[in-house]
Structures are given as C-alpha cells and as structure tokens.
Image 1 (tube, rainbow, N blue to C red):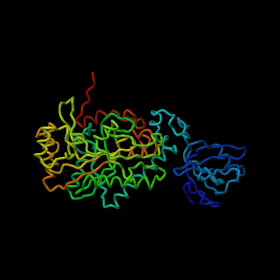
Image 2 (image 1 turned 90 degrees about the vertical axis):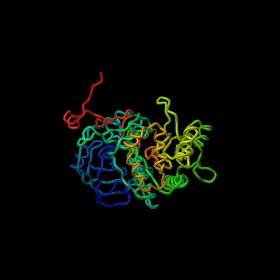
Image 3 (image 1 turned 90 degrees about the horizontal axis):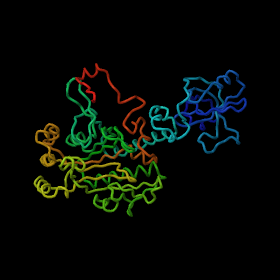
Image 4 (image 1 turned 180 degrees about the vertical axis):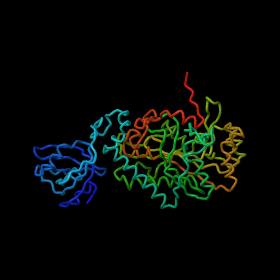
Length: 470
C-alpha cells in the first residue's frame, strides 16, 4: 500500500510502498542507510547486502534523487531508536528501489534553515528552497490559517465571492499595475489594489455578508513586510457598525490563535479583550499608529493585538498643496449630512475624524477598514473637496454613483493581511518567507526572469511602442 512517510509507524510489520526524495545517505560497512523525505516528513530506509542487485542500485543513489521503494516496516534496535523524531522508532527494510528521477547537486545546502544563503540564490531556485522543512511548514501553517478563516466566516453566514482581477484604473493611493487591451487598443485594464469598489457593489447587490481571500496588486516600493502582490482577507457587511466589525474581527483572530496556536501568549486588556485606542492616544503615548504592545519584545510567542480608531479623515499633501483622504475617499467622515461635511471641511479639515480603524499586531499594521460613505451626495462632496473635477469624478467613479442611485445599504468592512499575520505567527523576519513564490526586495522574479522584455510583434499587436531613455 502507498502511504505518507509520517504514517509509517502505524504500519509496523506491514509491506508498504513509499515515494519521495533522498534526503541523506549513510554507508555503514555493508549496510546502506538513507532517509527518504516527502511533504509529510522523513523515514529511515535500510538496504542489506543480501540482495546484491538491490545493493548495487542503492550504492548509486544520491541526495535529492526521486525514488519509489517497497519494503517492510520494522522496529529499530533499541540502541538506534530516536524518540525525538516522529518516525524514529521504526525503519523500512527495502526490497525494491526504482529511480524515478535523478538530480543535479543543488546549488546550496537544503538541510539548513536557509537563512545563511543570499536572497538571489534562494529566489532563483525557489522550488529547491521550498524543500526545506521551515518553508514547507510555513506554507502548511498558512493553509491552516486560511482554512480556519473560511470555515469561521462561512459558519456565520458570509458568502465567499471572487471579484475581477482585470479592472479599471482608479486613484486609490498607490500606483496601479496596468494591463493593455488588445481588443480595445489604447485602453488599459488595471490589476486591483484591493476589491474596494467591488465589495461595495456587492452590498448594493444585497449580498450583505461577503468575504474573499483576495489577491491585491500595488506598484510601490517593496520592503520586508510588503510585496508587489499580496493576499488579504477582504470582508464587508451591510447594516453594520464599527463595533460589530471589530467584535467579529476580535472573535475570529482570538479563536484562531487559541485553536491553532495554543502555545502563543495573548496580551489582552483586563477584560480579556483586544484593547482599542484612538489615533490621538497612540500617537501621544507611543509616537506611532502601530505600537508594539508586547510586554516582552524578545518573546516571539507573545501576540499583542490592538485596534486603533478615530483616525483623521484627511491629511495635507504638501507637495500637491491639497487635502487628501487619510485612508481612501470611500471612508465615511464623522458627519451627519452633506451640509455638515461642507461646513466642517471649510473650517477645520485637519480636525475632522473618520469612521476608520486599523488592526495592529506586534508593531505591524495587519489590517484596516472603515464604515463607507453610502450617501452618493456625500461621496460626491468628498471627491470635490479633495480637488477632483466633476468630469473626472464621473469618468473614474460614474459606475459607483449610478449604482448608489438604486438603494445602497449602510455598510463597512475590514481587510486584514494574510501574509503579515502568518509572518508574525511563524516568527519570520519578512513576508517572503511565508509566500510560495515571492518577488525579491526590488520586485523581481529571478526564477521566471520577470519582469522581462516582450517581442516586437506582441507590442505591435497591442499598439504599444517602447521609447528608450536618453
């Protein structure tokens, strides 16, 4: 029977069929030992000299070769048992070896945790880098986190809905990745910085409770906790409030940690809740809007969540000499109507507050959200106050204003990042360690060789000409 290697102790004295990669080979006189590795773990294989043909094959085997073996699972001698390994009590007496694929010598050591190897080598051979137990574990844990989130929200009536990747370029705070249209020459799609407008349109559609494990794209400078493409839990609710959204978020994340990572220490307020502070309070006390509230900053197993609320609605852009939304224009300012908004923006724009909130963990912003503007006249007034011309508002957001004329419910949401959260859970220094195929620090994919040039024929078909820099 074919089984995963981690399950081998369950089949003592049984004949099994195993598949995997050779991890380490050891010759002890006439006995040949080697560890076989698959996704689940490792097991020790033993080849005796009694079968000369089999022994000759075993002598040729090298690390990272892919093989199939058959044999009987037996108990190891007492002096050779390793209680620290899941399969350390048994070994497999091999009767069949089939080489499925040979391997070149890897360009770097796969037995270490990989931290000593330079990033360019690791990214160029990422498919080898991912064979390390550390990275494999990171991806397994990421999958467990995502499954927990899906199950939690589905059980509470949320509907998982995919939104488009090819969308429209609209100003949302960062540069868009543009995709030229072949059919509609001269026009472009944009990759979504977030599903912001789509999730609001889903509220107009009456779905009421939406979520998505959403892929997002932003053409901005990379850093340890940022990538050109990233993944977030996107969540939106109708007929809701800030308190309801934060309570749901708190329940989700505390339940997740307690269920999947009971060894983690949660730093909570005296009532056992995630603390909340206003933007003004955290800036005055910590000089940061994402303070690290851990009691012991050297303890990677301590998790200190925080909600930051009551952000300024607007901030002054000195280079552009204008006010801009602190979060995005769809965030609801703390006003009752259009008239109050116009009066307060005229008199004290820098003092206006927004129904915006951030979700912080161990000094990282891991999410943010807001109650949205659902009044089309207030939304138009916000865009105008930020210096947008009427024709530009209609060209870029006309679809939203049209939709809002058909009965839009009050709504709001939050979008915590998956990458940063898993990075913190796994004690990693940056999000590249928890993403299967990340970009380098300067945004390149060294394994695929991207970004790369395309053929002249492709450019011609798209009606695009590349102008060389002088």
